[in-house]
Amino acid sequence: MSAPEDEERLLPLTQRWPRASKFLLSGCAATVAELATFPLDLTKTRLQIQGEAALARLGGGAGEAAPYRGMVRTALGIIQEEGFLKLWQGVTPAIYRHIVYSGGRMVTYEHLREVVFGKGEDKHYPLWKSVIGGMMAGVVGQFLANPTDLVKVQMQMEGKRKLEGKPLRFRGVHHAFAKIFAEGGIRGLWAGWVPNIQRAALVNMGDLTTYDTVKHYLVLNTPLEDNIMTHGLSRPLGHWCSGLLMKKSER
Figure 1 (cartoon, helix red, strand yellow):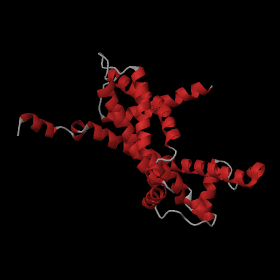
Figure 2: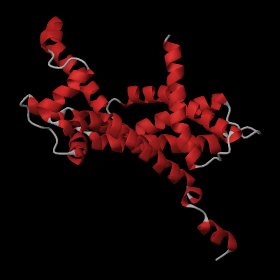
Figure 3: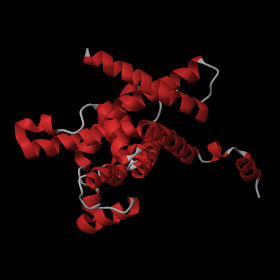
Figure 4: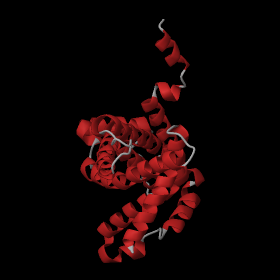
């Protein structure tokens, strides 16, 4: 065995397989965040679908017939009527979705930055390239994750169907995938993908651009190097900066 191969074997896994490492890191971080915020997503979905159903039945008097009003009352109603753990109804496909979406978009963005667009002579990634790369990475990540996104929403509504006395449509996540595929084929799994990737492109235009800008700043102005620790620190800081920019733009 040659010396270069021996040296490569001694390198940490993060340096031997940087793309795979960033995929796993992004997926794990997204999983933790999804577990923490999923009840908010569930209550939002319940309110949206409840409003649409009530409006279809009663027209202008829909607001009076709505059993849930507001995020907090909706969450409390789910806990009282269905149980505390039902706040995580459908979390499994949501985790699948974020692993595929977050990992896919980060690997795509890294590939675009390093191989397709390339950095400047000062090793800085220009803003316009970050914007285009972020949008393209969001499109790829969301397109890959669309089936899990669809199943997530369908699973969230199973608890509500049970309370209404309607038969459950799915026995579990894998049954949901199989049933949607059997009824609609491959196209059924990608229902609604066009508006989804449009939204993902806009979200990642800000998200990944701020992430890359923050990481570049940390590498140049702090003792941190371009590694997994800096990557993990840049993500929440980038989200925070992106949130500030969005709030300022709304004023």
